[in-house]
Image (cartoon, rainbow over all chains, first blue to last red; front, side, top):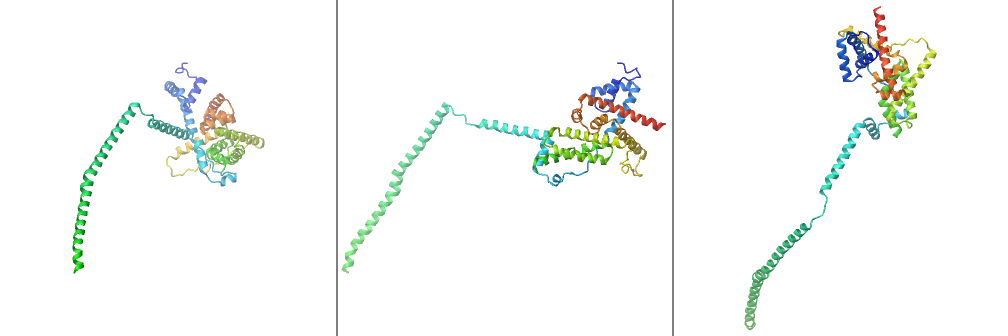
Length: 189
Length: 177
């Protein structure tokens, strides 16, 4: 259709102009109509008229209802937590959906993370190695114990315990013997 | 608090302004609009367990629409030549100290004219126009609320836009004459 030259505007074009003016047309449609309007004064004028009306219509403020609830039983009741949860679930479905997805993701992530740490059993080689190492450790402990026993019986018990006891006993014996020698002389006197 | 009142409180907070604004345009005065809102709220309370909460908005607008049509039918029978009262008289008062008084007055008059012309649009065109252009409803929501096919919504909207423009043009011509 050649709209550039024709001064009469078809019904289809008028609909498109109105859609553009009221902002319900696509971007491409807008571009096409603006291009046509720049080339045709009638279209330009029509577009401006509709745009003015549309902006006036869209600027009409939305009136608020200031009335109270007529049902007394409801107006008396206070808002509960249940109320708030309900409002979030129904009033903000995107937020609740996002929270649910996040929760599911967190649970799945933690489950996968734990799976990596689970016990999956040892190999035969590892068991053999561990067996060998524990045997070696026990052998070392055994060696230390036998060495300690030897040192205790040969050195410590003989030199540090038996010897001083023997010496002590000898001294006590000596003292008894001297006492026995002195006893008859005392009786005589 | 039980589930019924929780649902009701939510619907009241969410849609009371939509119901009121729609009634105001359909009926043309605050008293009737407030009565319509109260009626719709009572009906909502009575039927709250029978409709789906996800389509509650459409249900409430549909009920409001039907209520408005009833009032308009009754009004037609009683008053054939009703002259609307300008309720925004006080709101129209402009402080003389304000700069660019003429522009403000022109703007107010234009808005007032548009409001008036919207109110005199045929009922089917007016309801679609108000819901789409002023209340910001989507085509599908309007189709559900008014129980008309989606294509009819689009057609009615286009007709309403054209009719409004024609009415405004005839007003401008009268002003010139």
